[in-house]
Image (cartoon, rainbow, N blue to C red):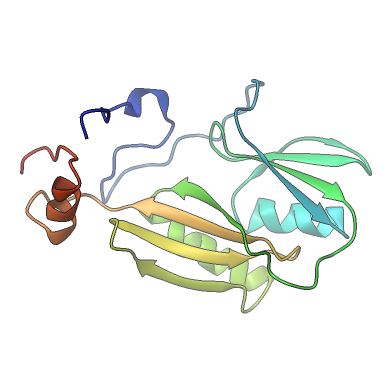
Length: 168
C-alpha cells in the first residue's frame, strides 16, 4: 500500500499510549469538513446528554433552532429540533478519544441514561470501543486506539495489509 503514509500531523488524535492525554476541546471557528446533524424532540435534554455524557461542549446555540456541539477539532454535531425516531438508526457515528476517557464516558452516560452503553470491547483493529445509544437513538461509538505492540497479531495483520509498522 504505497499510497499510505503517516499524516498524524494534520489530526487532533494523539499517538496511542496508555498515559496519553486527550487534546483540549477545540473552540475555534472553521469550515467543517464533516459534521453530523442529529434530530431531537427535546433539544435541552439532548444537549445535556451530549455535554455531560459524551464530553462535548456547546460551541453555540440558536434557541429553538440548533445547538452546535464540539469535542476535538473536526468532531462537530448539530442538534436540531424535530420528531423522535423510535428505532436506532442503521448508521452510526464514531468519535476518537483516548483510552482514559472510555470508562469515564461509560459511567457518565449510564448515570444519565441507564442501559445506553455496550462495551467497552477490544477490536481486531487495535482499538477499544464503547457504543452509546443517545436519547435521540443515535448510535455513537467512542473509539480509542491502543498502543501497538510491533510483535502482536494486530501488527502482523496490519503489515500483511501493507502498512509499515515501526519497530516490527
